[in-house]
Image (cartoon, rainbow over all chains, first blue to last red; front, side, top):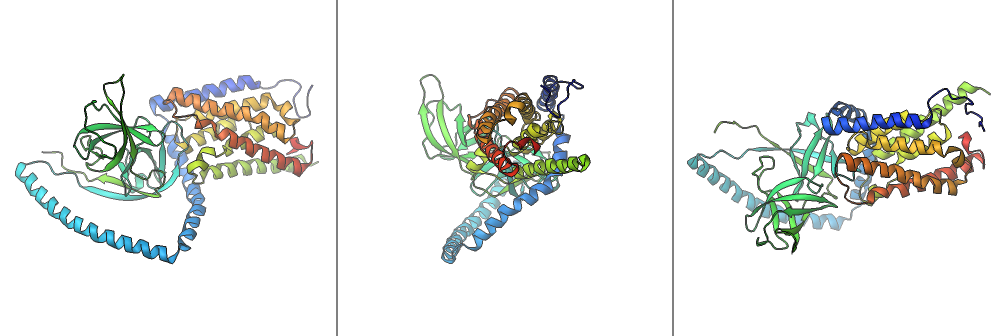
Length: 281
Length: 166
């Protein structure tokens, strides 16, 4: 009956009672956190505690990447350099155009007495960690409140919009991806200018919601941020339309899109910080 | 037998393995490795709940669960509840589990890991939103495999039948 090391007489609560107590504590945590957001202090505490550990544990991957980069073939690097030089030349032409356009735009806006578009500052952040969450897709970045980040800021990479900063700790921050379920992004179709709302579906995809059945949409159309929400600056590429289908039961089109940003591949991302501007018109 | 030195050695081993498990979770996992990654902390907690139930129990499991919740950026309590449920199941099946060889032990642990993942799924479903697929249950496979390897190692290390002296 009684195993060695097991008590003959119960002097403490049995496992079932203890399970019940801890389950109650767990449920209390869930409710307090999801309803009242009262445990953010605990999150910050954990983040401060784990930050150095995370930095250390990232070293092996970084070293491996360094080594892989070191042993890349010379010819490959030369090709890449040539391609980059060409791209740079093309971009420089574009930049000159853009400068000219920006000047012209500023003058026209001044003539029309419109508000200036908000200026932007960019903070570079490295991808620290990918969350193991099946309910929302998140990334952890190595920049936090000390880098000037606040919740709500857009995060981009070279190809497009990655997501939005949703939690900020002193030395790190969490980004909810555009492809995360119920993450809404106001977009417009680049070709037609039609505005719409893109939502994540999970599984790394997005859908364009509430597009009337007669909307002009084709596979391959790019979706850009429309900028009407005041959160994302206008014109950031978000997704490309993959498939458009019509369903009998719904008055809206079913539009499947693929995010453009290298959400699964990016190692470094940029956080856009809007420069404060005068509120007066 | 010097009980106190034996006990402190045990504490050192428990803390060491739990720390190692937390560290392994901190590695920058991605892609399919992230999907199939065993839940190292859960495996470590359940291992010690099986072999040292007086030292590692509900409290430790709950705290490490909160840590895992932070790690994944999910609502607090999700993994804490799952780990506590796992510890309960292990305590419930403890005498049975201790008599099994590694194969059977791992086979018996699989439903427990699956139950813990199901608890994560259920709490997330109720508290946040519906999950995007059943890939949430995949880590149970990885955890079972890890458990089998550990049990095999313990078996070879201590000799058959002496596992509970870990």
